[in-house]
Image 1 (cartoon, rainbow, N blue to C red):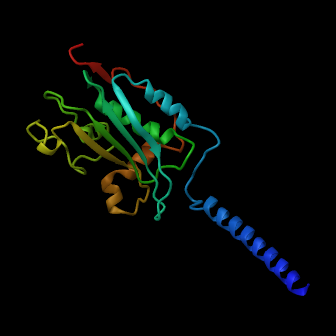
Image 2: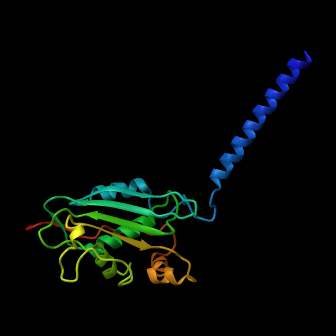
Image 3: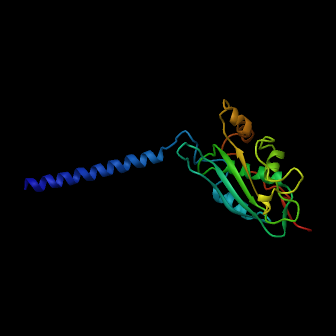
Length: 214
């Protein structure tokens, strides 16, 4: 009898320890990086709302648009993957960059992006006017001139490794004003420009794309 009681007590103790450990681990996961704002109650827009807007862009397929959870260093970001439909051209690349950066900053469900907004564009094999997305980000003021490599050569032609029309840019959102590297990348200026998170939902600029020859 005593042995059976001890076994029952041991079983109860083990079960209680399991419950306690589960609660503790769950609590740790829920409170990881509490200093990073996440899941705002109001303002901006939801990811679903942004997805609906992106689905309506003429001539562009947005195959990925999402924020990331913190990595081991507490870094979060937001990424876009876009494909240009055959027969279309991007008319306002700087406007597209601004729209995407402001859209990423306006998403309230998830974590505030504290490193970069990544924009990756597959423009397909265009006859001559390859899209220089880094140049567009410079022109729109999100990337300091000369801080990132261009995908377009100085003579206006595409570099050989980017003949397929692919280009990408990192728009930095670091807020550490004591770091010379951060200042060079433009993160502090970009955060000042964006304001409080989540930001205002941007309007889709008119004339972002057009049919070639249309």
